[in-house]
Amino acid sequence: MTTPPSPQPDDDALPTFEVDDHEWLGQADWIIGGEAAAKARAQGRYAAYVLMLMAAVYGFPIVQATFKTSDSATLRDQLHSAVAYGVGLAAVGAIFAAAVWAGRFRGPVVPPMPWIDLVLAAPVDRALAVRRWWRYAVVGALFVGGLGGLTLSAGLAYAGVVGPLVIPIALVGGLVLGLAVARVWLWAQVRSWPGPDRGLSLLWRVDDALRELHGESLRQHSANTSTLAGSAMTGNLRTARLTFARPVRRARTRRLRPGRPFPVLVRRDVLGLRRQPSSMLTGLGLFLLGSVVLAWALTQPAAPGIAVPLAIVPLYLGYGAWAEGLRLQADNIGTPSLIGSGPLEEAGAHLVVPTALATLVLGGSYAVAVALSSGGVGVGAVASIVCALGALAGGHLLAAFRGQPALVSGPQILIAWYLMPSVVVLIVGSLLPLLLRAGKEGGAGIAVWLVVGVVAWGLHRVRRLTHLHRT
Image 1 (tube, rainbow, N blue to C red):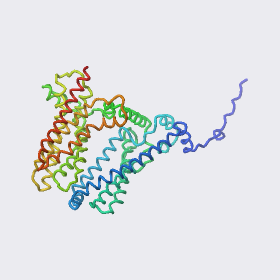
Image 2 (image 1 turned 120 degrees about the horizontal axis):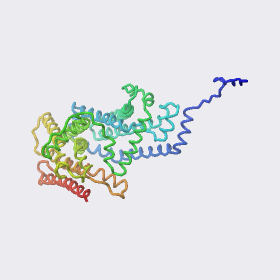
Image 3 (image 1 turned 120 degrees about the vertical axis):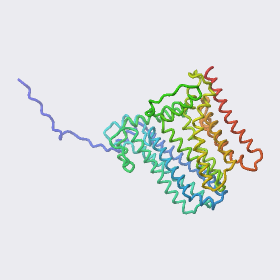
């Protein structure tokens, strides 16, 4: 006799449970992170306090003192010119481009790995699950943008260059710029992984952009964060460069022609820029921005003294974007050369391409500035440009062949080790126009010896690092 089948329970009769997403995420947060969220908020408030203190103690006094010592009327006219507006738009565009570039590797929304593996895999709204990290990024961007606009406008208003009405306008503009940069940063993070919705409309559809963040993309960004943090703490810059490297998709069929070692190395750097056009364009944008500011500082008597140091920063970064061959030589230092060139000869060859590009951009910017100012070509200005090129070359020799930091060192020593080459270039480059002004006896000789000293120091680092790796 067969047993009758047992009756199946009706689906409607099964017990159901309603779980509030906010309460469930709060419990998951406590289980996974404990008090990590509270500590993160405390660290964020402390960082904001430090930034406000630095802006009040250093930022505002430096801005107002710099512009107060200049001709306010002439400087006001120049700041309202078409060239000044163009430079400002270029600077804002560079900020957005940097946000797009950074979003490919490390976006604003990067939860810890346990949260990605355990929480995001659950059936919960992803926009709600990652909103906390998005809020951290938005608040930070708003704070930095507003504080920057407030500090700059308050310093200019106190110096008499602009009116007090500009202060609230600049504050609102900084807040808007910070919010826009944060949204572009998020959009770039969404685009770092293939998905059905990656259009520009995500810039104002924040919840949809958060839902488009793929789990594998978040894991990759979290791994990049750990890698970059480890590289920064240990001074292993090669690992960071490999993390940022993009696959080569252009000019793959191009090959180097045989020849003598020096020309082959130069052609190799040209081929490298052709295969990585992003490095070429990034260097061109940064160097062009710095060249315009430097040409303005050298041709306009009303330009503030801080214009030259401000120009040196993008010049240094742009030159470095073109000097990838120099860093590759430093990464493989100590290995036998396959084409029979010595370390100093190879380093000199790798300086040819970035120096030639820098000469063209700097020379063109200075020629345009002279034509617009209706003045003659100043010998001191030309000498400043030539010496600045030498200082940039020597500084990047120091940067590429800086070696490794001390095994036992604190964060202050590590930061000094990172900034040493750029600080040397900044100091030397800022002193060059002052030393080469007409009427300064012996100033030209001091300037030349400073540049020669930087280049000699860089070549000494090349020779020393090569010998250390061979012993």
